[in-house]
Amino acid sequence: MQPKLLKQYCFLFVTLLFVSGIFAQENLPQDYLTPAFHQGRREAARQLMPPNSVMVIFAAPTRTFSNDVEYLFHQNPDLYYFTGYKEPHAVLLLFKEPQTTAAGNNFTEIFFVQKRNARAESWTGRRLGIEGVRTKLGIATVFNGEDFKTSPIDFARFDKIIFDEIPKDVVRGDAAGLYHLLETFKEKSKLEVNKNDSGSKRFSTELFQNITRTLREVKTPEELLLLRKAIEISCLGQNEVMKAVRPDMSELEIQGLHEYIHKRYGAEHVGYGSIIGAGENGCILHYMENSKTKVGNDLILMDVGAEYHGYTADVTRTVPVDGKFSDSERAIYQLVYDAQEAAFKTLKEGSLWADASKAAKDVIANGLVRLGIIKTTGEVGRYYTHGLGHHIGLNVHDKSHYGPLKKDMVITIEPGIYIPANSDCDKKWWGLSVRIEDDALITLEGYELLSAFAPRSIDEIEKMIAEKSVLDNYKLPELKSGGKKAF
Image 1 (cartoon, rainbow, N blue to C red):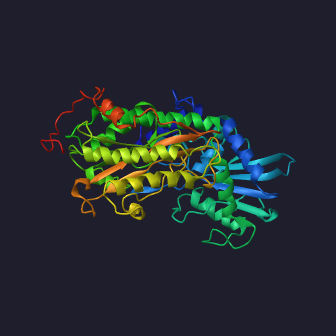
Image 2 (cartoon, rainbow, N blue to C red):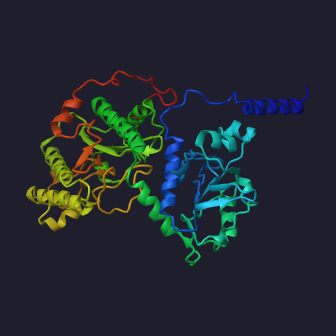
Image 3 (cartoon, rainbow, N blue to C red):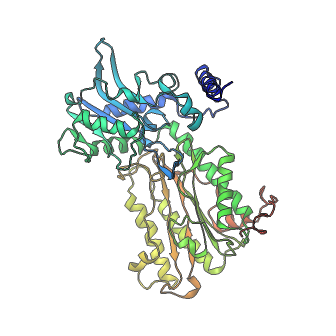
């Protein structure tokens, strides 16, 4: 058989496999958010939209890692929230009032998605296509992305067009890609090119943020199930690493142990770059190099959060690698612990972020004065250099209005003290960095500590470190290319 003909037969065979469903994936997790959840979120958005308005939500752009290799795609959290769709090159339109087709059929939403393509799917993964979106996501009015340009949608009929800021780094791609969906939107809506808001009162990115913040800041029961799982997995990672950590380990190896535990329990990603800072590296708030080859006997700050089905935890523990806090380490750690406890006591529905922040900051400021590290409480900002916390959910810094706390919000409380070398204090404090970060669910009368699975107090941490780990006895062969391990 001629090579060209053989190639055609192979392509035809692959196409038939996809069409017939033989390549359908089996043994998938069964606890994803349901179509009913996403439908409910779309309806909740409509309730917040003004009369005669349309809301437009695009997929996230694809990102280039190197040359023709892309980063693993991560969906725009807002589009995922409203649809459950995890593929690129799509746009969802939500209408406040039902719209009517030429045939007299009513609809309240239209979703334009990636077209099925057997050849492309054999390289980059399965696509739902129109039928997959209808059957698996429960969205009835679906078209291929290329149909957006010829669709009869008349944006001029709407009093308000609601959309997020348009990204500026979208590559052109094919004719049905995100770039062309955005250009079609600009053309159809008469949005000024290269601007997110033409100045007309008809266009509003602010209203888009108001709606999505209002919805996403308070978690539904379905979301809380996923958040609880992400947080528990993150805590299990912290616990196992506490038991397994040794002075001869590298920061990178410790990162790998955390993330192995995450994946062992089904977390697809980390919610942010894992921070493993030994000694003074912990003084760098978003340290993600994790390049120290031996962590030694210093404190190690581990800020690692599992992402489970899109929802991310955010948990930090700071522990002594040698198993025991020194006197100076103990003093700083206890101060941060006390600050966190003071913040917890303020939490309940209706309380303010400012109340929790002040409670924690006052404890740290007075404690640093008492230890002689600063002379006045006004100097606390030298060593406590960030805010107290944030919301978590589909983003690690999740959307919120940051007003009074409400029942079923999930927030972090994360005070910290960071004393770099050459600071204006006694040398015994140099290089010490401690952050304790926990995830709290706001209730009517207080809070529930969702990250209580991982020990926080000095005694509990030292007890955990003394336990045996299931990872204690793993051994890897030496590298033949270099003769020795890199660490």
